[in-house]
Image 1 (cartoon, rainbow, N blue to C red):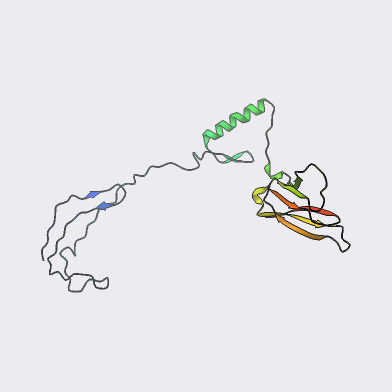
Image 2 (image 1 turned 60 degrees about the vertical axis):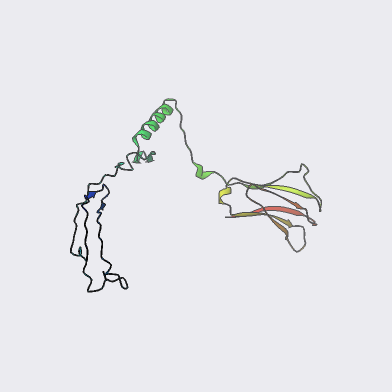
Length: 194
């Protein structure tokens, strides 16, 4: 077997990795080929006993500090700051002082807004005859929570009770047009699903 080694310097990288370059040339008669992912027992590699140990380098990643130190927002519960960015906290405090000096209180509670679900007709007349085409607009103030909706047309003047005459799909805050069906007392409702 022929063995050739080049003198290549060992360079330690900054990310705990090291590259070692070596050239190993074997003669054509080498029988050290893998057989089923295993080297034959009679295979004798010239560098088989070589072990290289290289110490790990220092961590060179940039430290951005704690997230709580400069999060860009402030969470305050009952006047106590749970997570604070001093830059934001100072700006908010200045605004609070200015509002207090002006004897103003600012409050926002978007959780108590009453939900609105209604229908509106585009035609100026108040009634439509059977066969007339009417356009109805869906009006909701919570469209993000609606998966699907429909306009349901009933006849409530029948002796056996109300009867569904048609159901037309409509998007939240969308429009739908349909022909008014025959009936004695036609009513339109808006049905939505979340």
